[in-house]
Image 1 (cartoon, rainbow, N blue to C red):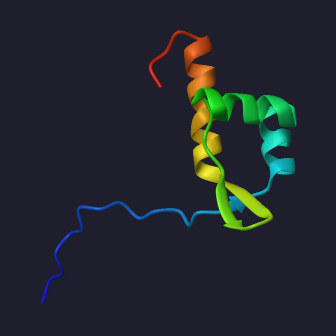
Image 2 (image 1 turned 90 degrees about the horizontal axis):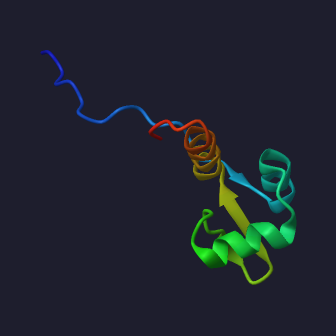
Amino acid sequence: MASKPSNTQPTKPQRFIKLGEVKTLTTLSTSEVYRRIAAGTFPKQVSLGPKSVVWIEGEILSWLDAQVAAKRGEAA
């Protein structure tokens, strides 16, 4: 019995990253990260609890790719 091909592509497991890693990847300061979130130009954090927030690594990497593409005049 042949299996049907799936229409969905295999997805990479999502990984949560903390602010320190976000800052390392983007070279943005803490205040600039939150300023851009407030402006709607940066991925929002995910709350894991009352004192714990994380970002989804794939969203940050996609944002970085879009920044590079925009600066080079390419479509993201």
